[in-house]
Length: 285
Image 1 (cartoon, helix red, strand yellow):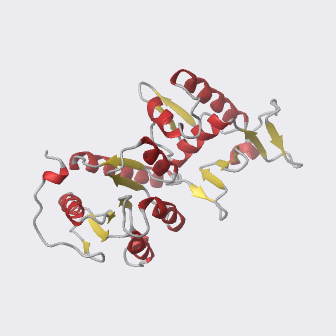
Image 2: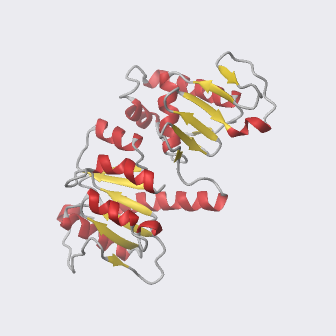
Image 3: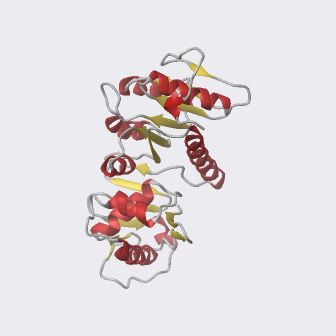
């Protein structure tokens, strides 16, 4: 298949409020892209797969779309360009997460590791660089929608949650304090584990324990929590946490994850970080 910029696209161009609906389509995907040609190619490809689509051409327009009763509250996934007029994709990403807990796949010409790290840590579920193959984009969309469906069927949270002050992240029974670098688990009340490490704190009732994390452990757990259920290779983890922990290396990463898993077990979270043989690690909420 040719790369997207080489593909010829025919048909009527859509406006920001247009929505294409096909018989039998289930998922509604928002395309936030100011390049009309690229947006048309993506939209045409999604239509052929039976998806519903809606469009926005700027960050501000995207916010209006999210607030719209007929579309915003029904969105299943967002495709987000970073270099948007007015409000950039980087600025829009946390606003999206404040409004809706929804998977966002960033599509950008920015190929730098720092740009990818910022987007992933800012709440993006995935990141794909331009130019790209439409076939690859469709596969990534399928993965994200499948993950959402699995979580819904199992009763697990679809994505991470934030408290009102934005100081904590929570996935399943885990809660991560972003300021204190501490993690706790709701399973503690039902756990008979005994306090055995000085890193553990306990309140007066003995029901709330937290464990303090090192800077590297914190960076790893934050990444995995922000992308719960997604498998990260060791190389991907190193890339994503490099800005916060430049001293972490390929040889030391496994030990950091081992230490983190032990701390999570101490607070009753069990083996929530799974080692996927031959691939990497993921957090199971």
